Image 1 (spheres, helix red, strand yellow):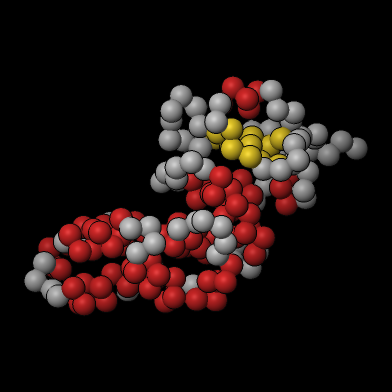
Image 2 (tube, helix red, strand yellow):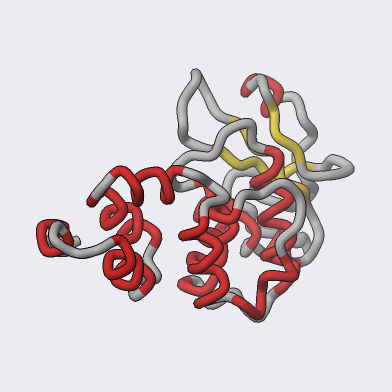
Amino acid sequence: MNINCNLLINKSNNEIEQIILNYKDPSVILHLCTINQYFISACIDPNGFIWNKLLEMYYSNFLEMKHGSISLKDFYVLLYFTEKMNLMQLPFIIYRSQKLLNMLPKLYHNDHIIILNSLCTSSILSNKAKIAMFRTNDSSKLNIRYVNIQDDCFLENSNDADIIPKAINVNFINGSYLPIY
């Protein structure tokens, strides 16, 4: 990221806001928001005005798809990566991603991408498995297993991942569906 925040130092808050709104990438936006306390606060607030403006500016057609308690920031990040992965035409991916994100007690940097990738597997697209999510040893890394249970879940105890029944004919780690002929 070669964006020099020093160029923003003598700008007014309105000018800085307009510059920030010209960028779509959440990591660039977060970097630019470090310019002053006003924008640090705006970006830290998961339902702050900056995320609302970005959603209205770039994803206004998807605002009615927001559901659950997902924050504006996380919804924006989800839509950004959904678009980057060319999945915007699959509304069920956006809905189910939000459902999975809402299950997590705390969101970390790559959770949105891990969840989107997990939903694009053949076992999920063909409805042959559900997703069990967990973190190991207080790690921030989100792990996914493809399992044979009633509904997607988050496991507080990572050891539970070993006792949940695996989905039939599905690789429980990468989610590929392997039908037997």
